[in-house]
Length: 83
Image 1 (cartoon, rainbow, N blue to C red):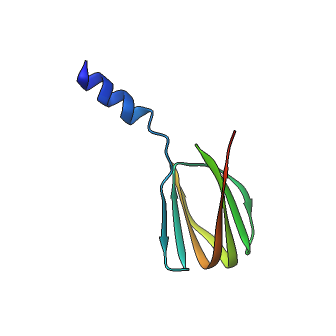
Image 2 (tube, rainbow, N blue to C red):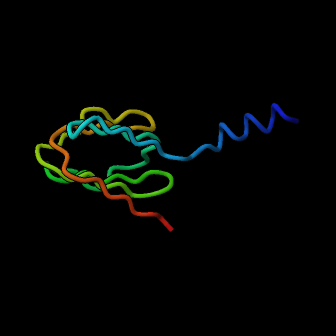
Image 3 (cartoon, rainbow, N blue to C red):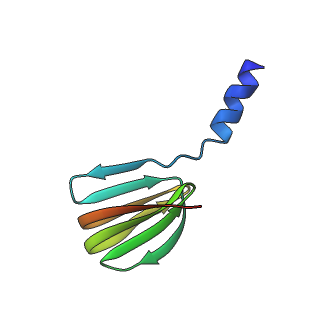
């Protein structure tokens, strides 16, 4: 039963991880959808919240399965809990 419980935890693990490298790169794991994308704001929906990355010269360099990489000059990051 312990092994099944461990597998269930991994399958249902929906927390998002956000990695910030200086003010030039943000990686967001468990990204579900891009809500807005332009050179000053990238807003994405994760499993637990909406994330807005603000700055200048922003570009999405990688939108792979379950994650996104945003590069540019980042000035702020906002998190909004999804109800």
